[in-house]
Length: 353
Ligand code: GYE
Image (cartoon, rainbow, N blue to C red):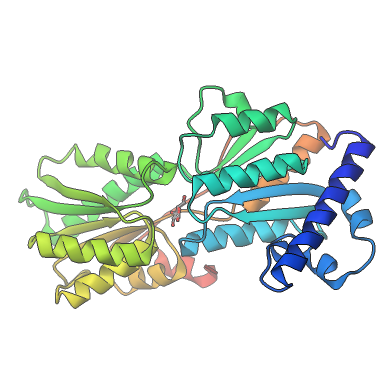
């Protein structure tokens, strides 16, 4: 995958120059080079960086952003694996929720001739051209977390992530159980609002479709409104405030991630409404971060559908297989659970995000 020795050395020199340039522009700490594993060496001016890199596998990662606790954990799982000790040189770029930033990062990885690109795409559409460019440059692309909507699936090697449709369905089944527990077999209307994540992202599409499939089985479930709250706490709070002002009879909030749920909980409390097993509103969330699982334990959130951010190790395994000439699967699904009060204690024991 690394091409000729000359190409590799060229790559190394370009990278070294880019790093030194980035460090001098950024004035050291906090600069772009800090995001690469070579940042410290370059900043410290230690000799041997180019030499060290020549034996390393250069991986360019284009991450969506840093919008949520989940995303931070996902980034950490990448950074923990792609270290120099493990034989890698990591170039990490934060897309800050903009596809154009991600495309720019990919083009810079291509021009630096990295060995592999890992892309976590913001939304599903609009990736054909840049993926084609990577393919023509002979750089394998591994997709992480979200998917791309392309006709030619040879544009990427593998995808690692969650079964978002299943997550949505599990949210529906968890709601069935929570309603049963709270209201028994009542056929009274159940008024639902949905805070969804970034429109057009795989997480939003799958969770929406999966939940709607279950909702369609229940004539008395009324989805009054679904609104894009961008997977952030601030937007979750803002949209929940608006929804509470607009509808007086909300029974259920489905929040497509924990960060939006935290914002929504603030809004509910401020509006003087109550949530949880003894309250008026039932809340179901996604991700299962530590803070949210504590709220499940305390009976505030009825169920949290886990989304597993620990995907770095899978990407590492795929790269190792590719280097051994071994076949890799097209799709890798990470394992996930549904947490309610019944099983949450177990998960809380070692949750570190
Ligand atoms: O649920 C959310 C994040 O794509 C699975 O993105 C990911 C989602 C995750 O911002 O918290």
